Image (cartoon, rainbow, N blue to C red):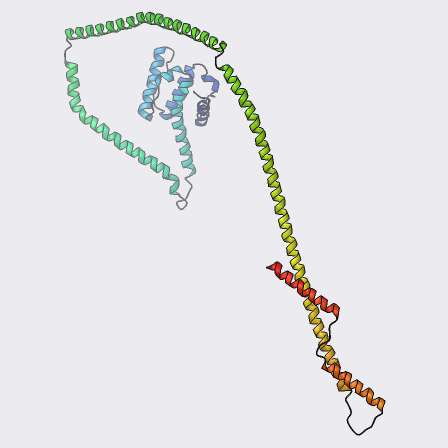
Length: 385
């Protein structure tokens, strides 16, 4: 019996309206009067007109009471109870009574739910809530049909079985057959007793054999232990050579580790040097790109200066032409002094010289600058290539 079953039993009995308070301690020890009272109340709750024996003072009366209750529950409620557990009147009897109490509790609970659902209108009725009950009803109908068919087959066989049963009952008993059967049973039992006695006699021999084997195994174990100790104490002949080779191996391993460390260190140095060279190459490329950009900017500046100089030359030509238009040469019979004529001719000649010049002459510094710019341009073209 578990504590959970006992708690469920007490709660269900309280909800069913049992008049007496049931404690969990009532079933620690056998309590047949309480069990009998609960069974009477359950039978009366299921069938109020049922008649039960009320005498439970002697063992025979208790056996009769338990037998009647078990038969009543089996025929009326189709619940099979264990009479032995009910007679024990302890926690195991609670497990059996819990079957009946659970049935009554479920019936009361379903009845309360039916009364609560009486006020529900037809429009709000939901068939989905009754699907589980419908399945259960179908299963019960199937079981009833199968039970009826089986009962019908058994009743059909009753006609033949009745004749055989009556013939067996009416047949007179032959004492010789009965005596012979009893003798055979006696002989069989005597053989079984002899076999059992023989096994008991052999047990002593088996025990002696087992003890001898145990002693033999113990002696073998002691010999093996002594041999093990002797082998541990004896120094093998090849140990000197083994220790020498072990020492040589240790030295070789130290040399190997030293070379391995050196090799690792050198590889790290080579990797660092490669990284430095890579950085230098990248810096050189950046400097070359910077120089190329500077050369392009200088070329742009030189081109701008050349364009400015050409514009200045065009402007100077325009001013000379404007001066000629403002001071035209007079042709006529008017006479002038020699000084005027000389001045005017000089002026006109100077104007003609200005008008005849297509471009202004370059100074030596400007020619050197153009030469340098041309050389820089060729260098930049070589770099780009």
